[in-house]
Image 1: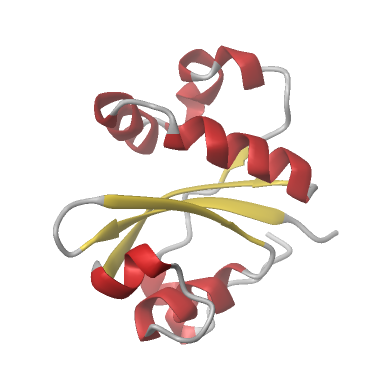
Image 2: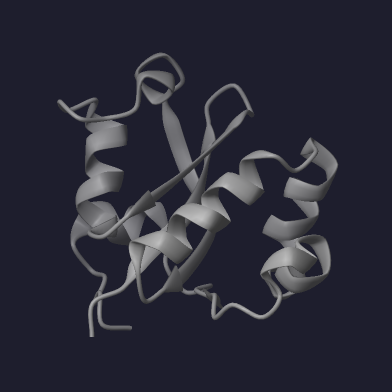
Length: 119
C-alpha cells in the first residue's frame, strides 16, 4: 500500500517546516540538497532533522493534517512532536481520522536510503 507522509522538519535556526510527501526520502533529499521542487522556506532555512512524522492513506487526509499542524501554536507543535500520540487531543477535529505516528525514521536514514516506504 502507498502512503502519504506528513512531516515536520527542524531547520538550522530552530524553526520548523511542515509538509507532505508521497515519497518521503525523495522529499527530504530535495529539502536538504535544495533541489528543484524544494520549498522556498527550506532553501533559506537549511533542514537539519526530521522531528515529526505521520502517515495516512491518501493525499486529502495528508493535506488536512498538514494544514491543521501549520495552524497550531509553536507550543502545541512542540508538544505534538514530543508526543505524536496526542494528535487527536491537540487536533480534535481530526481525531476520527487514521494518522499513524512513525517514530523510527530519521533524516539521516532517509538520506542514506535506509527507509522502507511500506513501513
